[in-house]
Image (cartoon, rainbow, N blue to C red; front, side):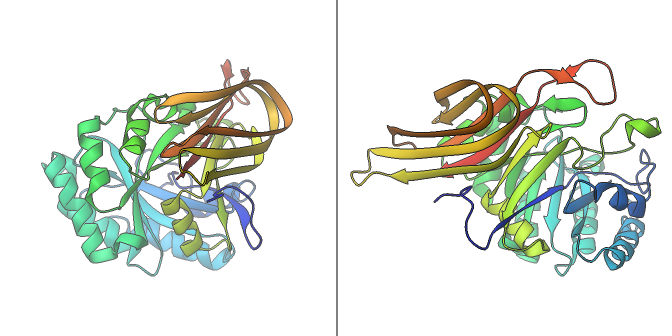
Amino acid sequence: MPRFAFSKGYRWTVGDLHSHSEHCSDGQVSVLDLVKASRQWCDFIGISGHAVYEDNWGAGQHGDILRARQLYPDMPIFHTAEQEFPVPRHCMFITTPDNRELELQQELIRRFDRKQGNVGIEKALEALRFVEKNWGRNRVFMVFNHPNAPDVPLDSLLPLAEANGVFKVIACLDRGERRAEQTWGVNTEWDRLLCAGHRLYARCGSDFHQHFSKGGHDYYPGEFVQDVLLVKQNNYVDILNAYRKGRFFCMCGHCIENPAFALRASPCGKRCQLSLSFKALKPMQQIDIISEGRICASFYDVIGDFSFRGDFPAGSYFRVRGAGQPSQRPYSEGEYQPVFLLNPLFL
C-alpha cells in the first residue's frame, strides 16, 4: 500500500515521545513549561519520566499532565515512563489516556524493573505477555530507546518481535545526534528483523532534559528531531495506530517534507514498482533505497523537489534513508549530519 502517499482525509502531525520533566531526578523543567515550549514544533508530545521502584511512582507527573491536557486540549500529551527493561535497554510503553495509562507504568515497574532482579529474555517476554493480557495488543506498543546504549543482540530482538506484536518501534537517533547502527545501518539488526517478516519501525527522539539556552545539553522536543505521522486526526488513537502500523517517518534537522512512498507488485509477483518523491529542504549527500538487507538504488546530491519511479525484483520490504551535508550545530560547536528514515513498505 502507498503508506506515505498523501491520501484524502489524512494529514501530517509532528511530535516526540521521549522527553523528561522536573519529575525526574535529572530533569529541571515543569510539565507545563515543557508542553508550552514544545508547542512551537510539536502537535503532540510524550513525557517519559525515569521509572523508579517506589510506591505510587509517576502520580505527580501524571497529575501535571492531566492539568496540561485541560489547558491544551488540542495537543495530545502522552504519559509514559522510561523503564529499566529486563533486557538491558531503556524502553517505553505507550497507550492512550483511557487505557489505564498510569497503572500500566506502575505495574511494569512493580513487576518487571530490571534493577529489582528481573533480568533476562524470559522476564522480558513475560512483560510483553502481561501487557497484552491486561492492556490489549492493539492498544499499546513498546519502544526501545537510546541508540547503542547498549545494542540489543538479535537473539533477544527476535523473540521479542515474535512474541505478540506489542514491541513495534526502535529508536534510531536521540540526544547529541547519537545514531544507532542497528537501525541506520544496512543488513544490521533492523534489516534482519524485517527480512524475517517482522513489522518493526524506527523513530527519533530528543530525550529532552534541559535546553541549551538554559544551561542544558538538549533540544526542545520537535525542535531538532521529529517523528512525522500520517493521521486522519491529531488524537491519541490515531497517533498510536500510526506508530503501530508504521505510518510515519523520522528525521534530524528538518531536512525533508511531504514524502510520498508507494510500492506495487507486478501481476506475475516477481517484480514490483516503487515510487518515491519528497522535497529536500537541505542538501542531501546520499539517498538509499534498501530491500532484503542491501542497497538496491542510491541517489546523490539531492536538493529541492525529488522524484523517482523504478522497477525492482520483488522483495518482502523496501525502506529509505537519507544523509545530508554536514551543517553547523544550532547551539554548540561542531557539525551534525541531517538524516531521515522512511519506514518500510511491505509486499
